[in-house]
Length: 390
Image 1 (cartoon, rainbow, N blue to C red):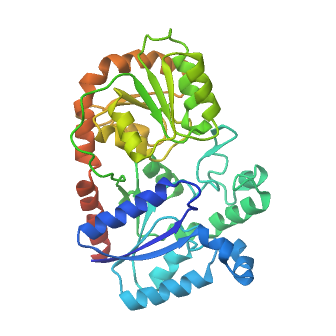
Image 2: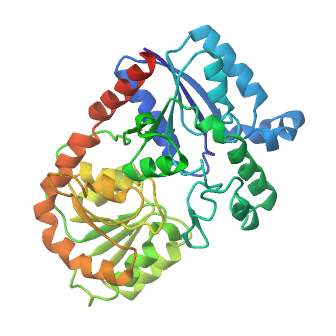
Image 3: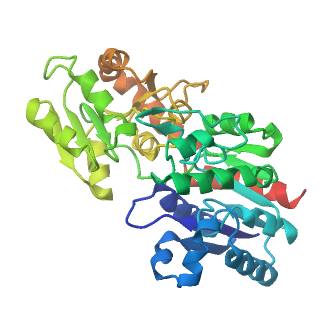
C-alpha cells in the first residue's frame, strides 16, 4: 500500500501536538509496512519565500498553485493508493483534495479541529465557547471579532476560504474523527455517517504502570482554555492538605497564576516546564490526572498519556474528554467528568481521590484496547483499504 501524507506543519516556535501526531502516525504506518510518501510544507518556510511567493500568500488558503503542481507531479511519479490529508493551511490549501481527485486518488482527512466551520478552528473566543458561525454561508462573526490571528483582514480571508471550500470538504471520501465529538461536528456540517470513521490518535506504550502515586497532576499549556483557573477555584474550596498534593506542570500565559497558587498553599506545587522524561516522572508520581478544558478540546493528549500510565482522569464534559475516558464504554469509565463549573469540580475532587485505585486498572485497559499504536494503525489501514476497494 502506498499513501501520500499531506500536512502543512505549524511553526516549530509554537509547540504543536498535531505536528507530533502526524510524525508518530507516519512512523507507525511505516512500521506496519506502508510506503509513506510525505507531501509536507511548513509555515517556517514563509520568511524565506520570494517576494512574489509572499504576495500570493493571502490567497493560498483558497488556492495554492505551486502546491497543486507539486502534488500532481508527486502523484504521477508515485501513483499512490490514497492521499491522507491533515492540516492544509496556509501553504497546501484544501484544493489538494480536488487535485487528488483529478488524478483518481481517494482522499482521507483527519479532522484535528473545527475549521470546516470556525475560522479559528476552536469554537472558542473571548474566554468562552462560541458557535456563532454555525449554519452561516459566510462566517461574518469571525470577521467582526477578528477570530483568525487577531486580524479582521485575515479573518475575512479565512471565512471566505471556508465558504469557497464547503463543496471541497463535502467531497472528501472519508473523514477520520478523532473522537465522537468531532463526528458530531461533521454530522452537523452535513457529512453522512458512512463517510465518518472514529479513530483516535495513538501514543507509544510507556510500559507497565507503576504503583499509584498521590494527589493530582495538571500539566500542559498554561492557557485560559485549558482550565487551570477553573481547577484552582475548585481546589481553594477545600482546606489545605485535605486532598493531597496538586502538582502543576507546563508553561504559558497563566504561569504566574500557577506560581502564585504554589506560594499561597503548601499543597500546591508548580513543577515548571517539563521535558518528556520529566512528564512521565510526574505522571507516575500522581494518582489522578486532571484535564479540565473549558472549550471543546478535540483530543487532549494528556488524557491518553494518563490512561497509558494507568492513571484515571478527572475531566470536564466537553469536547473529546468524555470519549477518551470512555464514559459510554460498557466496561466502565476510566475516570470522571463534570461540567466546567468550580462547584461541580470541587465536589468531584474527593470522589476522584477516593476512587483512583479502583479505576487505575480500567485506565490501563482503556489505553490497551483503544489507543495502542497497533490497534489504531489497524483501524487506519482498514480505512485505507475501504477507499482502495471503492
